[in-house]
Image (cartoon, rainbow, N blue to C red; front, side, top):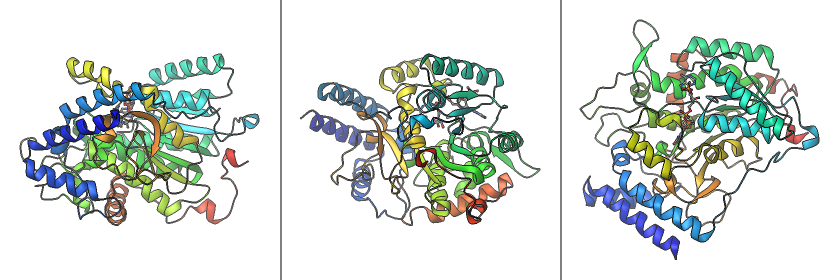
Amino acid sequence: MVFRATFSVAVVSAVIALHGGGLVDGLAVWKSKATTSKQHPSSPYYSYKTFKKLGLPAILYSAVTKVATKVLGIKPKVVLPSAGYNSTLVSTSKVAVVTGSNTGVGFETAKALAVDHGFQVIIACRSAEKAKQACENINKAVEKSSGYGKAIFVLPLDLSNLDSVREFGRAINEEFPMIDVLVNNAGKNSAGEVTLQLDSMTMLDDLFTTNFLGHFLLTQLLLEKCSRVVNLSSVMHHFPIYSKNDVINSVDSVDFWKQAAIQPIEYGDNLIRKPYAPSKLAALLFSVELNRRYGDERFRSIAVNPGSVNSDIWRNYPSAMKYIFRQIYLTPEQGSTTSVAASVLDLGKEVVYLQPYWLPNKRKTTVVRLCPFPMLEMLGPYVGYQATEPRLPNDLGRKAAESLFALCEELAGCHFPAKLESRKSGEAEFHRNDKE
Ligand SMILES: NC(=O)c1ccc[n+]([C@@H]2O[C@H](COP(=O)([O-])OP(=O)(O)OC[C@H]3O[C@@H](n4cnc5c(N)ncnc54)[C@H](OP(=O)(O)O)[C@@H]3O)[C@@H](O)[C@H]2O)c1
């Protein structure tokens, strides 16, 4: 009953939201998206302009689902301490690297991995001071819980500086023989500034470089010794194009990614591109492509949406908005559940994307069907983590990933191999502790 009310509000809200763009158009979009699951039309994506119209309805939806969650007593799934691991083998050999782990979702992820799952967690942050403080806080929590994990600071990592990424990768490769999990978490959502000079011809977008290109290079540097890569995506992966009227709105084309990664952002016409949503689709495609190339029982990648989280990511937003976010968003600890689950659970091979909200699931399988309308994946009833079909192009993202890889390999000056060398030679250096 309460859920029916919830969905009525959601539908009404969505219609209100779409009305600004023309009710008829809006309903057409809703209808075409709602009926697509595996088969998408040529462009399955919503535009950033559609997203911007969702503000008020999303707040309403959040209010209703909060009440519904309480009334129905929905309890979130939790990732149990040491899930999937033999606690007697709690090891000093389990190593995780978590980027951007001095605050927010990254800090809570690092803390849970160290406290509950016995990892040595490398706190990979741009500020040495903040990283050391985070280590101290996490190690105190480990001590209090009589756990075995540890937070470690090695050296600063500034993802917007590719030289810093190379230096960090070199140091980790030298010090650690294997890495169980790399969590590509760091990110920002303020408008990209084109400030990073790559060469005399190319300026990199600061936001896209921090969120994606830096992680792309870091992953390439650590790939041979990595067993799992978790990429922080977002509900924004549904909205990567700026406007349906854009000249270049196919995520399959290299030009699409160029506009996010290197073109200056000019406000005021239809060619504006906001790089945040493309950077989050890139994170998702990254997981899909890593699995396609290297996925086997010793390697996999999972993309996660932490949900809408009240973290420092909103630091540059007006106070009034931050007040609303505090009321309706998840805590960073709740937001870390998808990352922790993706890091430690033995999830089925078909799982490539986790998000934290309840979604309607007519087919009761382990993976919930594609979210029929993205707003349900923003502020719905919080359930912890939920394997969900991501929004991918018709070919499951193959062309888009090819274009993304081609551009990013060129910009970062790196190359992803067709196969992993160490696995070809059969050296059993790669082992998951949960399989021991
Ligand atoms: N919060 C949400 O609602 C939400 C929703 C969907 C997805 N996400 C994703 O979740 C991830 C974590 O975000 P959050 O909400 O936890 O944000 P947050 O609290 O602001 O944490 C972001 C972390 O990234 C670090 N960082 C920023 N720029 C960096 C750089 N150039 N090099 C290295 N580290 C850098 C920050 O370091 P400093 O403290 O030094 O700035 C901080 O540690 C991000 O990828 C974000 O896109 C968040």
